[in-house]
Image (tube, rainbow, N blue to C red):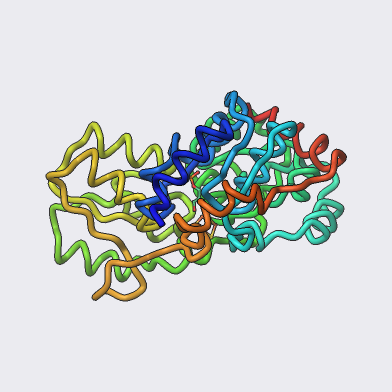
Length: 302
Ligand code: 13P
Ligand code: SF4
C-alpha cells in the first residue's frame, strides 16, 4: 500500500491536520502539514480550523493539543509514545513536594503530564522559559519541574535560585562533555549547538543553546561549514534542508555512530499514521476537570 497517498486522501476527506515535531522520522516530518517545536505546535493546536488533529510527537504534546482545543479529536499514532522527562515527575510526588514549599509557585516545563499541569501555575517551553521566568518577581519562590537541566540553565542565565525537581530526559542527559570534546578535536571548526535539556558541562561548551526551532533559526542565518548537534538526531533532517552545504555531526553515546534517537518519538511510523487517520484511534481522552485545570497554566504561558 502507498501510505503517503492514502494519508493524503484521508486527511483531505476528514479535514484533518498533521502536526509533527522535529524529532519525528524524516518521512513523518515530510508529510506533516506543520512541523515545529513544542511551543509552535501548541500554538498551531489552538489556531487550527481542522476537525481532527493528528499529533506526530509524544503523549504530553498530544495531550497539550487536546487541552488547548478540547472540542477537536486529537489522535496520536502510537499511544506508547511517552516521554522519559514527563515520566520523571508524577502527580502525587510533585503534590507532596509542593506541600514542603507552600509559598512557592510551580513553573513546569511543557514536557509533563496533564495531571502535573493541573497543579502548576505556569507552563513554559524551551523556546520561552527564560523570557517567562524573567517576568516573575525576584522575591517569589519558584519550584521548577520536571527538568533539572533546563531549570539549572535558567537559574544560571537569570541569576535565580529556583528549587529544581530532580528529573531529566534520558536522551539529553546521557550526552557527555567528554564525547563532545573528542568530536570537537576531530572537527575543530564545527560549532556546538545544544538543547537546554543537556547537562551543565555540555551547555558550557556550546556556541548556541536553544529550543529545536531556535537551533534551526541559528543554522538558517549562520550557514557555517559544520555543526556538532547536542540533541535528538531527527532535527538534522530539517537542518540539512536549510543549510545543505553544512556538515552535521550528532553527539551520541558511541563516538563511532551518529545516532541519538528518542525511541518514543520514533514509535510513530507512516503505517501507524495511516491507520490512526483511517480508524480515528488512538484518541487522547481527558476528563473535563483535568482539561479545565491544566488549561490555566497553559493559557498563562500563551
Ligand atoms: P522543543 O520544545 O525544543 O522542540 O523540545 C521538545 C523536546 O521534547 C526536547 O527533548
Ligand atoms: Fe521526552 Fe527526551 Fe524524547 Fe524529548 S527527547 S520527547 S524530552 S524523552
